[in-house]
Image 1 (tube, rainbow, N blue to C red):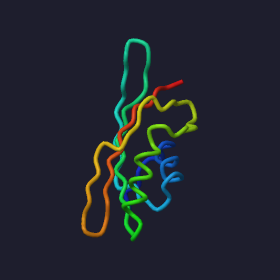
Image 2: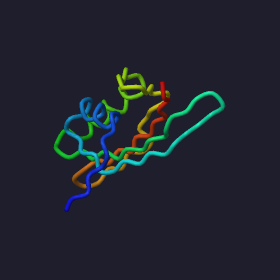
Image 3: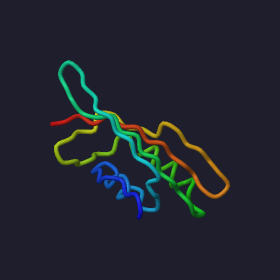
Length: 101
């Protein structure tokens, strides 16, 4: 029996932006301020292949300004928080703050 991660619109949008990646993990927790509610999300992406470094760099540069179109959520903040280079892959940690509409 395989463990499947629950669907996340943000994960799907990131894979559309970086189709060569694989989502290794996803973690979300509720977030609230005095005026807004939403969630903090952490997504771990893995990239393999010969072009992994330029792909990771382009993705990290594009991500903060990318116009995500998520159903009933706005991306308030998003960035590649960590990049770990290994012999055969690059592991990117993406952190985001999503606000409910």
